Image (spheres, rainbow over the protein chains, first blue to last red):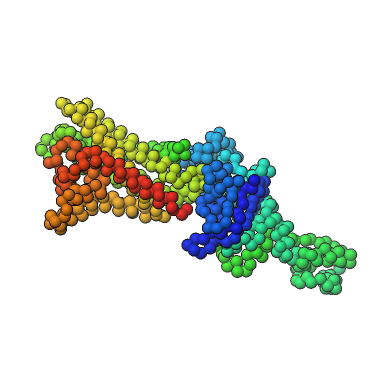
Amino acid sequence: MSCFRLENVSYRYDKSPVLHGIDLRLEPGEILGLFGHNGAGKTTSIKLILGLMQPTQGTVSVLGGQAGDPQVTQYIGYLPENVMFYPQLTGREILSHFARLKGASLRQVPELLEQVGLGDAMDARTKTYSKGMRQRLGLAQALLGKPKLLMLDEPTVGLDPVATADLYRLLRDLRDEGTGIVLCSHVLPGVEPYIDRAAILTEGSLKAAGDLAALRRQANMPVTLSLDPVHSVSALEKLIDRAGTSSGLMIKTDSGRLRVDVQPREKMALLQTVMASGEVADVSIHQPSLEDIYVHFIGSGGLAHRGGGQ
Amino acid sequence: MNSIWTIARKELSDSLRNRWLMAISLVFATLALGIAWFGAAASGQVGYASTPATIASLASLGIFLIPLIALLLAYDAIVGEEEGGTLLLLMTYPLSRSQLLLGKFLGHGLTLALATLIGFGVAGLAIALLVEDVAIINLAIAMFRFIASTVLLGWGFIALAYVVSVRVGEKPIAAGLALAIWFFFVLIFDLMLLGTLVASEGKFNAELLPWLLMLNPTDIYRLLNIVAFGDTGQLSGVLSLGADLPIGAAGLWIGLVLWFVIPLASALLLFRNRRI
């Protein structure tokens, strides 16, 4: 049973399309990163999966049922962006309220608050909470009732590095127990090590989806080799020129190294050539990062949209 | 049903926590006792005038106060949750929109009913105990009728506040519209009716005219509390039209009930069609 499955989903708002032809699925025990600039349709996709809206076209099935069905929503945890809880209530009161609504055991309340690091603050009113503390409370709320599908919108906003690491460790544990997790974030380097698959949305359509290796293949972006010469940089340069690869850019860095951009399929051949020549003292390889892939897929046109930054 | 009660329970504990319940009860009790004690001041002495006069005075004050309190209590029910971001979150829970709104209504309605019961109940008890030779049975019946109609009137305005709260996107707008509702029903409506009467110079259908009073819950409320004593001489201004209303007390009660059922149903319908 998939955590959710979007099949050819389109959504229109006042006749202008917000999403078109989205096919996306999430299996249990998987962390999916959902990326895109502001207005790309991330929030709309999430709302469709949560059952807050009906798609104009296509089907949305969630946990083997209909999106928005009470039997389904009971097993979904959701952390919205920027949630302000009831300021006059304490963390414990708020979580108890939500636990009752979800039909979760009230014994979970103090446990979860301890788990997210609010153990000392659970009896303080939330108007005294910092942004990070509110975020933790939101997280505890999302974890009520052992969700099978967890959707987190910018979960690390306001969290310090230690808390962020704790959060990702927690998410890994949940994933290993079989929870399907969706992560929306703009802090791409932060989430890169933790996601199993990424989906990139632009202008309401899915530009790319898959694990990082597949995305790298699809993007076909050059790999950067950083070479430390034994003798001189120019000798290395000549050697690479002779190798006749279609690799373009070569840059001499200030530290006397040579940076070469090479197509992924020519990487091994070039490496073997330079290694055999004995001209290389050290080599390091930089794969395109999630951020590079993201920028590649949203294109330069997309850059204009990135100014808003969430 | 469970989720409705969970929402209602939070509203109730909120109004206990922010002392709304206590404050409203105190206001009601003070008001009722003040009117009871100084009711005869117009005739040159301090003391209890009579039960019908006291209830009539209370009802006249009630139509200003009850709608205002009800609107204040309820105007941000939905729009407030939306501004805090909790509406979106609540809607991802196993909780339907109707359940949320009905839960709010139960919570707010109980708050107002409790405050009315405590405030006016205490005043009624004090009158029964302290005033000599007051007819206890008559007082009890009148007080019961007064409290019940006050609660119904309050529920009506809570439901009207919901109609605003599910429609607008910002709290200040909801507050403004709630005040406008108060202004219309409490101040403008009777003036308009009077103006219509005068301008029509009696050509207006005489049978239809009294029914216009049913379009305003505060008029129904006043009629109910004054007509019940069979003393239509107390009716002044446009209310004197009510003497011609052929429906009696039962009809007035039904009118008051409809005045909270219909706005509540409209609010539910509007909320269901709202985009989140």
